[in-house]
Image (cartoon, rainbow, N blue to C red; front, side, top):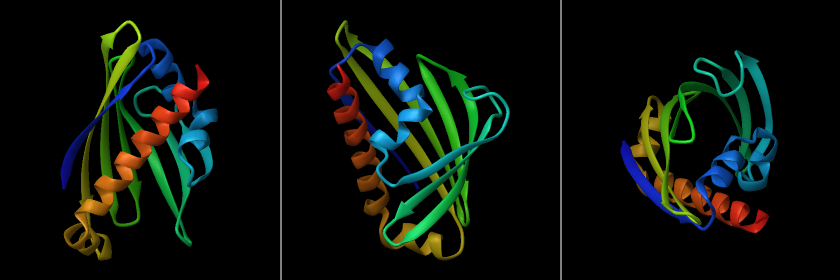
Length: 145
């Protein structure tokens, strides 16, 4: 499954990207994030791996994030792997004006086992969650200015 979303953020790109990069502030816009821990490599460099634990409903989901492309402020590609799920997220930050940035988010999911069934039966659920994450980020960064 693949899809793309956009959100306009009312801040200059350099501020948006600085907040996007700040792992210490991830929990401010990812409300389900329980913990984050580096596993290998230098943060934000290609090949770096980080363990993330999220709470989704009553379940805890552990995933490993791998930096695939690190070309900020323009683009950051991250791959997330969890039990039964592989997910690539392409994040692009485009200058719309001196005070406005477009976050273009493209994602691809590959699933197996029961997660494959979930994607088939409820693809809108994944897109809805991504849209909520983008909105949480927008609210967070615009609230910091």
